[in-house]
View 1 (tube, rainbow, N blue to C red):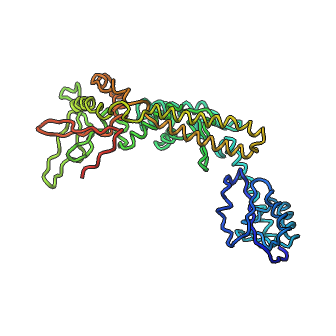
View 2 (view 1 turned 135 degrees about the vertical axis):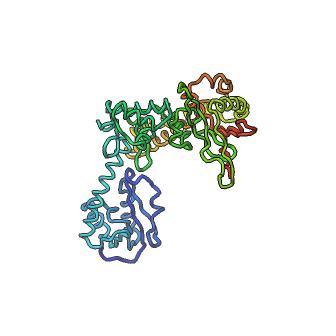
View 3 (view 1 turned 90 degrees about the vertical axis):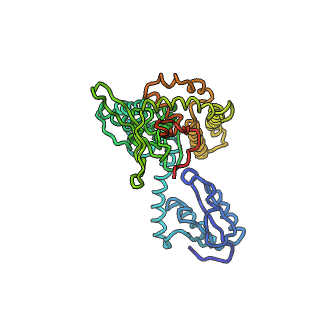
Length: 445
């Protein structure tokens, strides 16, 4: 780009604060050689003007740029800045560009300019909390720069959520909306409805940015926290056990071999009733002549398990103050959320006073919203209350026996990971209960 003369080698770069986001870029660029100075602009061209001024004072032989569009995102802007540099006898080298002739430079700049213009539009939409491009999720439609409820579809999503919260079965909830609404969805789709931030009123972008309260939520924060707990506690259970109506389903294991126990029913001779049994799935090694454990009467094991829970739970919980109180943690997180929301509310005034320009205010607002969303997610993962407060009720056998099987299943899975039973002296006994707030026991050899 014109005759070069002896002098120093410098570097110049340009970043869009909305599109590129980070001011750490100058330190991460490998220029391929030692440079006397790095001039870097963010949003304006003040550093470029400083480069021109200092090049008139100190001989400068070459300016390195990453790509031609660093000098201008339009052909006119690129031409003007190239002319300023060549007038001073400075050679310009684009270290990451394959274009060396003028025609290639203009084509590359136009191509990159269009791409960055589209990217900037997406970035501004993200900073302003507008939905990403694409079709609106089921239950919503697009309207006035945000998602609005599609009431006919939102009723179906809400019905699936309520059925799951009531029975704790994802497959059962999917079958329910199929039978009631004629809406057939896969189990994976039902899980996505339950866990997607969109249905909780949030937007999540590919960059990881989160915008809470961006649109009306189908799932309230309290329901979202309960859904997450139900899914976590159902995770170690098999699909059939997770949806089984019996409270002991998926929780009981043989203490001798560690195999899970399944529930089976046997009708009486007169056909007027049936008995429930717990049967081991893989107990005993026939090659070694070992006999499998017999079936265990369901009602007997349930009574023994409740008695063991009432005896072991106070010891497992410990004295007051032995474990962190979720309410204190929730209060601390609430204070942190309030502090960040206060900062978010101050941004319009700071922008009006000129402390922040518009792009900087947008970036700061997006970062604060993402931090608030992370704190809210952390708060939602906390258990509903202090175990010490609940101990007075859940250590009473009558509390457990008065519950229905569905209600008892809910509480069992909230507090219990496994119930181990052992057949000894022709009798079944509950040998151990592993509570959900304790570490998982080692697997049997």
